[in-house]
Length: 342
Image (cartoon, rainbow, N blue to C red; front, side):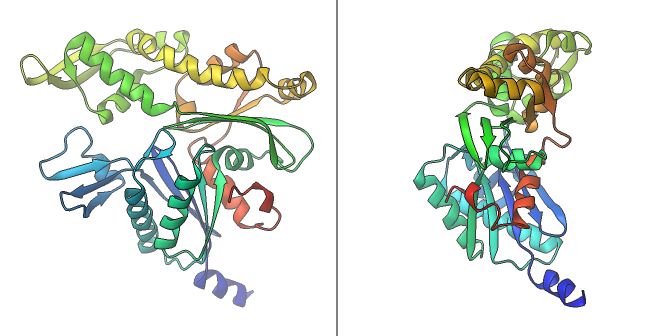
């Protein structure tokens, strides 16, 4: 028992959810030890100045001489070098918070990364000091984290709505019966709000303000929107070139976001309609498992259920489901060997 405890102190394997909006690190035996925005800020020389929350604070108000990047964009590797630097820094942040010596890492990725993008992620893991890296697709990790028996014969349908992608998969015997990945997610909702505020009010707001507006009074269901109060939004008046504040109604936000939300729901419906009738019946009986940060938008489960015509189950911890699933895989690598994409 003492020997096992010493071994865990010396070597603890790691799982990382490398998301478009946020990245999480799971430490074997300890759980989630880090959750930071996937953002990096650097100077004109390309040297990193800040990562995570500190870097995200500069979005929309970047000072002269600084460059702020989101290394993952729409589920793809936007900047290979930035991904490598970001991954190295968040691992170092985790190490500072808790001693961490590991040779193995599982990194969760969107399902439609190219081989070049996968290689970039693996190289970044190597740069961060990991000798062995395994790539696990987000939909599979989400299913495991949601408590689904992915090795079983009974098909299960999981939807992971993230910042950059909507991942939809029907899983059976550690494989996909049908799967799809659409490069649409929470970031698109934020961008739509930025565009709307500029066009409707002549008010320029940054991505952080748009995100706050989305969570304050955003909804994927009209009845949910009706329950919410108005919201005051501050930004830059583009005509007067001065700060300004306007009142925005939940109805405005709902109609602004409804088209994108419907696209996300239709991605789920498209996968469902491609299933054999007997598989559809299994899904109707068990329901669709909905996870990911964007699934937390008010009424999203109702919206998807209405569009697809079947029950939707919200998982207990939508923001953490992917990395929790990867954490489970850490403890049984051999058993889960078929699920890795490299």
